[in-house]
Length: 128
Image (cartoon, rainbow, N blue to C red; front, side):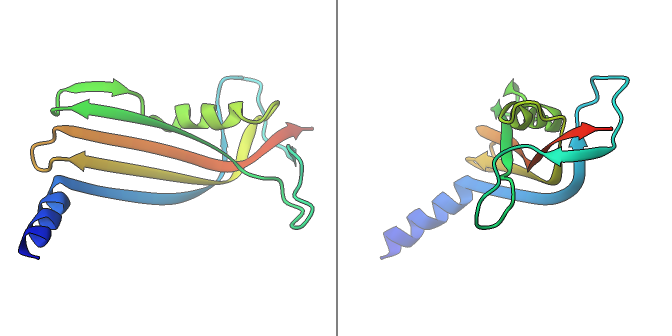
């Protein structure tokens, strides 16, 4: 029993994590200077029971080895691009949730740190 508790304590000390969650009204990429936000329609097939269009999700992660060697990209705009790619002709997302997560393995030595960003929202297309 003592060995099991010791193993659990070592595991808890080896893995530390935290997450934050935020909500945003509208997220769109700024890659078109003539882009105007106006009326929009939701894109996708609505669920017959709820009448709502399913949300799309995209995420990106970055790994940092030994606190020195980065790989990947955990940028919100990249997560937005990945989520918009899942819905054809989408200009933006509405009712957006942004989640950021940070994981440390073998704390406090930072052998591996992983930072992830996830963007989830309803795809829309603007029209005038």
